[in-house]
Image (tube, rainbow, N blue to C red):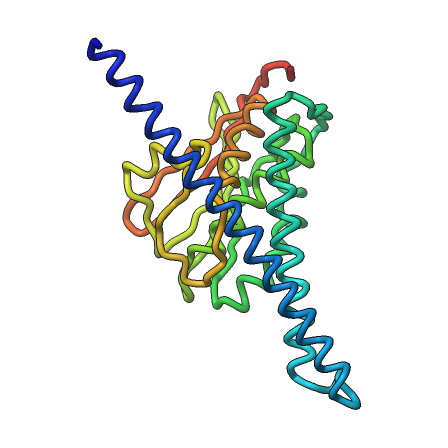
Length: 251
């Protein structure tokens, strides 16, 4: 067997290992969410059977919170898996619209204000002074930016900043999410958008994850004729989606 064949076998082995780890993670996440829902249901049944006014019990409110969190987690996981299947099957129909980023971004980021405040993070908008308009499917673009913001909220320590920035040069318009207080190792930056890959970094808020999000981001960006990239150094990580000023036609 020649060197090229050996390398192909090695790469295939690595991919299979990543795939196996990914499937184990997905199974664990699904089981964990269902176990939480089942335990919450049992606790709720006990409260209803033993408490005269169960709604006044602190346990009742906590059980409701577990229901909501577990259902949201399960729904997001299923949505991500379905989206990944649709993309691979090219079943998603692109519906591009002209989007003014300086008007669109504030409405989207408002959804993250409470979350960042609760985590003692500072959310900053650093939008270009000039009007920046792109042609994109707004639902797909929102999915990408929300993934960037979710990761920023997830990995940014308390008392650090998350910045949403727009800028333009002669060839492209960029939308970036910048978070401080965390770095991604160079070797991980090269793998981060690969399917089945999960970042092993510390998660101070214990949100967990499945490794699907950035895989979806890369595939969705390709559908928008855009590019995504990441840079990380000096306790700062930057995720960007970049649109050419003269976009290619949507496929």
